[in-house]
Each structure stands twice: as structure tokens, then as C-alpha cells.
Image 1 (cartoon, rainbow, N blue to C red):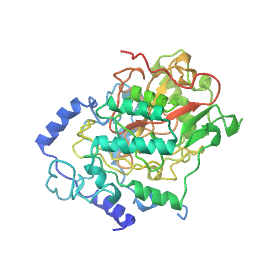
Image 2: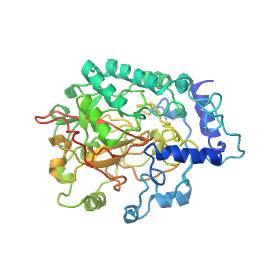
Image 3: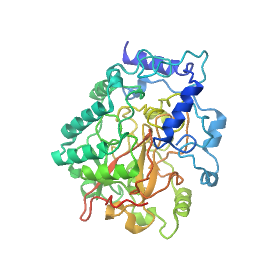
Image 4: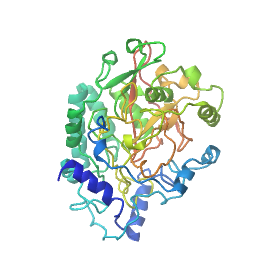
Length: 440
């Protein structure tokens, strides 16, 4: 069956089918989630059309009640501990209501059906579902070394960081289902190439970010990864990563975790100064309210929101309680699979796919661009947003302090739909943020 027909079946069938998750499995999922950094409540958290994006039918709109809740009074959101959603646990759809409920799949990796009771996963990914986490990691390390021109020392450090975690990965290979495979992505971008990185960055797949009204790429002081880490087109994003691990991985490859305003500038298409982006002298919540009230709403792809342009048409794993390596698949798309989901600087997937860790400085000395380290901040949106808009996702929006901590804290948050991307300073001075010692 061709890619178009397979994706058509996926979109149509997922509007009518869903596997029943029995009470015992749900209880087990919650117990496992508790041991895998699960969130305490809620959801966490034309002719020029893209070759892949054009093949995926538009998703059905979310119910009006859900839309209303997603635009609730921002002050009410401050009181919620729900890391991504604005409703009670279980209210966000994992797939549309079923017309008939087929039996739950047997334990272990799906063989004939995916958890939605629809079709097999992308043909090129079927084998990956039976691989171990270690095999997944080894393939990733090899791809990073060849594609990103990493040294042996850099790859060794990346290995060390992954080895210290039992869940750091591109998703649990036994339960993650990717609607599009790597091979399909590569075929599509061969027909419609992605934008190249900027040579001034001195590293593959990085884009220069600067004030477009005053300067040119060659005068940029910072570059940002074009894709979510590992920053390789048609590779799946790394998830189940804490903010601290994200900062350490960026440092391992010669970069640093981005400051929030750098991510926002890369998304909106122009970079402003920290002095204009942060109302210094206020606490975090006050800084957020001041910033959000004054922001201009814009998305990487334009002035009007359009989730269909980005990797937002996947679903949560049925029974996913909000987090948990063995409960929630990272059902992401390959990076760059949606060529129209791109910013004016050529940065992809800033909306959809995986949400992203960034560093939010509440004082000048916490800017990672100056060698500091700030507070945890989530940017962007993730892979279910065509079906359920859990929160705002315009370029300049700053989230409530869900799971707040210092970036360097050993207790910083991670989850199945939360990844990151890195920045690199081009001007004189520190280019990486210290990641030791850990904060309590």
C-alpha cells in the first residue's frame, strides 16, 4: 500500500476506532508512570504543498468546550500543576470515540495492529518496534557521529549521558508508533529539499539568528539547531530528557541550551536584545505576565495559526496517564517531515512534534549566552495539537511554571513528548553553560 493510502487510512480510521484499555492495564500504567517521572496530574502536559504534509488529511476540530478551556484566563493557569493540559486527567483524547471497541492488543510490541486498532506503523519502522532500547541508542550514536561530524570524545560523552539514564531515548521502542517513517521522510525531502544551514555557524544544520532589521547572517551572534535534538533531518527527536540532561547533551556536542528569547527570535524571524525581552527585577510569574501581555502573536510559518502545517496529527497512546516510559509512546514524526513548518530563519518543527526545553533567565547572570543557567521553560507544542490544543503555542508565548526548577537541578522535569534543541554562541565569551553542581 502506498504512503498516501496508508496515511489516509490512518487519519480516517483513527477518527472511528480505539482500543479499550482494561482497568488492570490502566492501574499498571499508573504504577509504572509513578516510577518514570510521570506528571502528577493532567496531560503534561496547493502546488507548493509539502510532499508528506499534503498526504495527511486535516484532523477533526476539537470540541468547542475544549477550545474554550484552552483559552482560559491565564491567571487561572498559574494555579494548575497540570504540566501541559488545561483539563482534568483523562479528558484529552488519545483517539476519537470508537464506533466499536476491538479487544486490547496482547502484551509486548504490536505485531499486526497499532494501539489505535488501525494499521501497522510506517512500514520502514516496523522492525524498529522489536528492537531494544540499546539498539535504538547505538543506531542514533552512529548517525550522530557521521551526520554531525562529532569527534570520538564528543560521542563518548553523549554515550555516557545516555548510559546514566534508563529512559533517555527517542521513545520506548516497544510502544512508540510513528505515523511516518524515516525512509518516507527522506523520499519526500528528496523531492522538496529543506533549507540548508548557514555556513557562519560552523556546524551542520544550524541557522543564524539575528535582528533582521539591522544585520545580516554573517554578523549573527548566535546560531540555533534547525531540528530538534539530535538535529538531524528525518531522525526522531530525543525525549524522556530532563532539562539538566538537555543542557549536558548540548554541552557535549559543543553547544549550549538556548535562552528563551533566542528560541522565540528563531521562531518569529528576528532576534531582540535580552534587555527588551526580559523585565528584569520582577519574579518569574510577574515577568511572564508582563511579557505575554505585550507580545505580538506570530507563528514560525506566519501570522495565523495553522496546526495542519506542522507535525501535530498523531495521537497519545491509549491509557497514557500523563507520563511514563512504559505507558506513553513518543508517537512523533521525523524531523523536517513538514517542510512548511519552518521559520524565516529556516528552523523547523518549532510547533508540533516534541515540545522543547529552554532556559528562562530571571536575572541577567542566568543567560546561557553569558555562561549562566536559568530556570526550566517549555517552548512550542507537540504531536497531538491538531486534535487537542493543550495550551497556546505562538512564538513568544511563555508558559506557566509547570514543574519549575533550575535547569541544572537533578530533579528537573522530563517526559515522553518533551525534547530540546541547542544554540551556539558565535561572539567572544563562554559558549556553554555550566551544568554542575546540581541544584537541589
